[in-house]
Image (cartoon, rainbow, N blue to C red):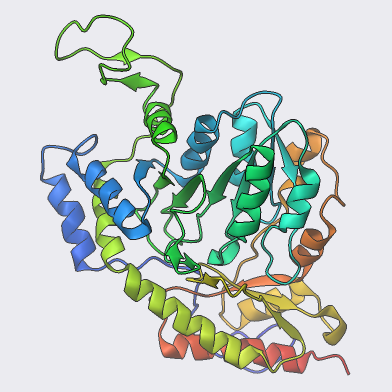
Length: 398
């Protein structure tokens, strides 16, 4: 059996545990098979049913589902009127799509620094980034913890901006007792396999605005409509439709929609188990001075998508890469979320330089994402804790 890096001895596990994994049961499979045997694989009745269900889950008035979380961000920016010459404020601690959505519209992403305790975008930094060219804020609920919506909505209202909540991580979370998805001008979801609820792929935009809703529908489907109120020419017959704007093919299939509908039935179970694992991790790691825990704002009743462990360099004789490798040798497969977006070569070529967001950059050097998903057993959780503790104690700086 392979020995763990540096520590010596045998691994805490003889099989690997991954940082994230979907949970699919027989109900999910039956839901997809039902669609496969039906008349509609796409553009069918499951799309509307999923949108209705998302509205019930979140309390939003309108939902528009689409092909991915990235597509959701893109059409949200289009619905907000983001265009060439505009600026969109976002965080660098996120997947690239949170900034790319501005670029897709010809706008320029502006990166605001984070709160060093919660790791979410800092409202004070957002306010400092606002200029006459700012059109929108894309605020990411990092790890599933809600951003400070009250403060961000206040900034947006004061400056005439649109608040787009990038809720790729946030489904199941509640802010001041209300589900995230009904509070910002628009909220986007992702249904990628590592998310709390999955459709394999898929996304959604939630909003309370009928105006945004109508725009989202157009941008999702080529800018094409069959709504006679929106048509500019006489209707030729029941087959007739018009393209009235430039949209995209961002449709979701009925197979994906059926899976997500079934998964949403399990959201309370998914949420409860994730909270249980987070509590156990917090309890185990709180007493280790070599590690720092992500703090949460009291307004957020969080369903975590990610569990972020932050190393304290002053208390350890190894760096993040060595800690990561040691965990891997213990058969604990982790990840790092995220590389600051403006570190990427593409953004460097656009003129972005390091040093823009020093707190975000420092965070990146010190974090590891531990395994967190519904299907983890209690033994899995304890094995992760044993591995982390073993490495942290072994390499504690004297």
